[in-house]
Length: 347
Image (cartoon, rainbow, N blue to C red; front, side, top):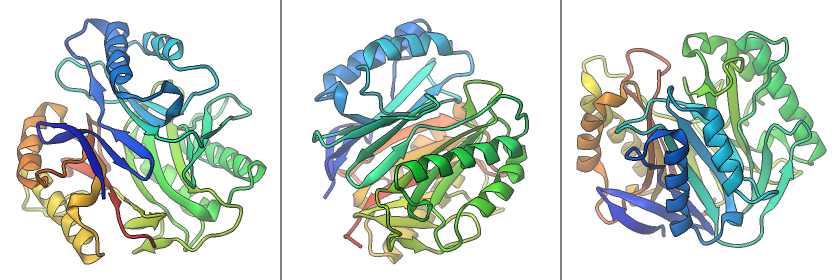
């Protein structure tokens, strides 16, 4: 069902499913400085991509020491004008001397629609029945996470209305904040903004927005329709669902280990993998059909322990694409938050 490309060290360079290629994050820690690393990463993408014009969305992680201006200068020179993807850029911990990590998703057909948002702070990209947004943030007199959350969600309301989209069709959210200890300020706004019975899957970590004034970077995806669609939402709660299935893809909320007896990243990773595998099996999916996954690790210097658990768990011959970085998580008790996207039967 899912095509794998160039698997090395039990990670696929890319997974392809339904006219979209999901690339593993690319780093170039051997190069000196932000600009040189960005140039080398983009050179490698040129070897992999069929066409720069087909990039739909992406996540960029800059180390806390990286020069953001240097990254954007190289990126803006590389990406074709008016063909920009829905891109989210955060700061996070990276291993192996990396200062830049880039994970892109590439369409394999030309049926892409791009809209530069009116405030010019990002892109809305439509492809394959899904609408992807760049991570959105605000500043200008709004200092707290609560105030910025309200304003970001208000701008989403305006954008959805102008583009004939329905908030009820939300699929997934990636929530990156400057200070994870302030999570309740965001959650209280989010619970009131998102519709009961139409909660998405989602992940919230301390992936810091590049602009220090920005308390929040919120990237959402929606089903592309002006009507409220019937979308499978498993175990809906007050703020999210365990997973959301639409158009043959299941988007899972990030999983953490709640076992108080588990110690260290290796044990936490093993527990999280077992939880996810149970959820997959219980809902008629297969581990072999995981398309892509994101690992947010409390201590990136402990990555070797995660890799040991990964190597023991991943299905040989069906290795997903993968992104990994270091971030603070919702609780200091957690060593890892892990999220997956899975190909499944059409719902």
